[in-house]
Length: 251
Ligand SMILES: Nc1ncnc2c1ncn2[C@@H]1O[C@H](COP(=O)(O)OP(=O)(O)OP(=O)(O)O)[C@@H](O)[C@H]1O
Image (cartoon, rainbow, N blue to C red; front, side, top):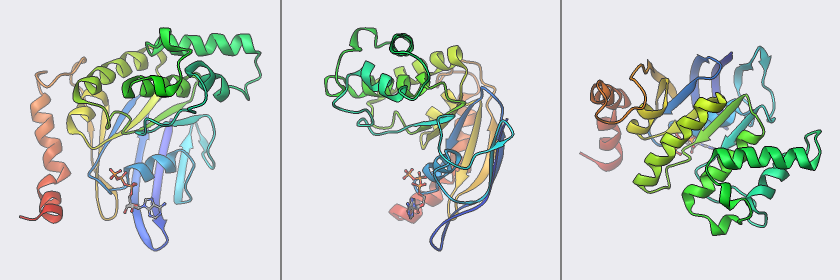
């Protein structure tokens, strides 16, 4: 239902993505795993319609040519909400072009605020929330727009390990309820296994797909889930971390 065919994506003369071809089924959770600089964010931006490139992105048979609310992005940055608006008003602002009245918008905002566990914080401003709560609010705002695809660019990377683990599990619960297709970028092998039905491993120079894994481990996945360690090692080998470390840090 989503058909990604990127022959080439360049910035000036620098080829950043080359031959990125894969399909995603409706409602799937895809992890994109790759080392720093391999073009993960560029890939997401391209799927979101923000970049010119040689190739096509098709969503439900329609070619994606420009940004729109069918594909919404959540970032790593804790400051992606409007700081002068409460959490509820951040969501109402996002919905303002909808052909509905304020009462209906408020009901949608409430539904998604509750979904991400921020029921008691609708009237708080972003600066009154923790990093994890801000990311939940950003997810609520994105989902309230009912996108066909939710793009997530390392949304939990700046959180402490414990909060990150909790938010991974919460995101999975939310996804099971809303069943939006999610493309989740991470450089963390464990996170890619816990979340993704498919794990697309990218390599560098230029960014390309080195392998696509179907992840059939039973959910909920934890490091002690049967098969987890084997898959972790396989991904580690495919990421070519040894070569990456040698190149960037030295032998
Ligand atoms: N707007 C831009 N103009 C020029 N070059 C860019 C631009 N955006 C990204 N690049 C280059 O494209 C390459 C891929 O960057 P990108 O941010 O997509 O990688 P990434 O895998 O997401 O990295 P990280 O994990 O470190 O965030 C890098 O060489 C980067 O310098």
